[in-house]
Image 1 (cartoon, protein in one colour):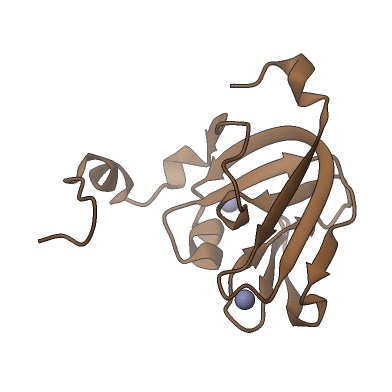
Image 2: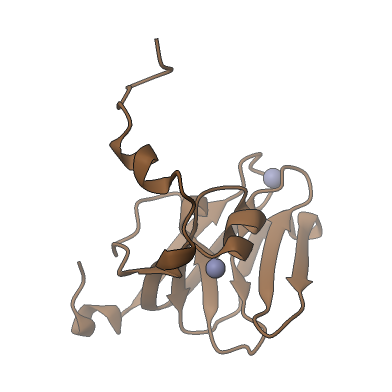
Length: 144
Ligand SMILES: [Zn+2]
Ligand SMILES: [Zn+2]
């Protein structure tokens, strides 16, 4: 895990959607990496949790496919945002509603991030099958 001094250094992140039409690059400072288990994050990702790297707010450089980038903001006391490729639906980076942070979905990165997750947030809301999934048999390919 990076220590606090290292986290103040600007890092360039590059990533893409699954179909590859949208490519991005951002150079910014890491502020955190959390796994969010809340119901809304499970819905918006279609998975057990959202894996989000938080950084200082900077504009995303869309290297390609900017015309395929769509933003969805779900209103409420906590606003849930998804920026995604309109072709394949993959999650992409976005500035939060307040503009106070850039949120990078860790799975969209081309390379392993230099930071590990720090917190599991909204832990009590986690899917009942989450821990069973971690303990399930590990297969290098499809289950036989
Ligand atoms: Zn795509
Ligand atoms: Zn959440």
